[in-house]
Length: 205
Image (cartoon, rainbow, N blue to C red; front, top):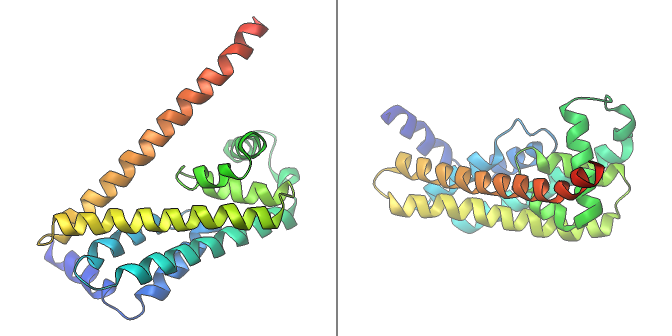
């Protein structure tokens, strides 16, 4: 346990931590296997001890997220995403969901998708694939990236303050809180989709 804390402390107090957070957030924008939210929450926990600093963590996380999202947008725009996906499968379902969300909610879908597991990449790529205006994409994505960076960093920071003498518990608190919020978002989204689809099922019957 102490060795884990030592490694985390050395990582978070390194002068390269800001560059690392930026790079992780960028890659997570188009390759969602990289856990940028976990990294930002962890940095927030240790920011409660003074290193790294809170504001720079928020800034680099937001900048990295926006950069990654624009790469994802460019991939969707240049690769003909809709034509390349198989007719069935999870990726096709994610694309269909993202396109429907953009058609019904417009740019607000970019903000909502930032907090949906796997939804961010699907929506940003889809915005490029359907030719969503880049200027509108930039405006809504800026709100999504900044709000996400503030939220993730402060969740970790509050956990670090609550468990100042035990950073590992602060980290578990932050991750648990973020998981709870994500679960609530998913449950609400699922319930709303079911409610929206009921009339069409009855009409078909």
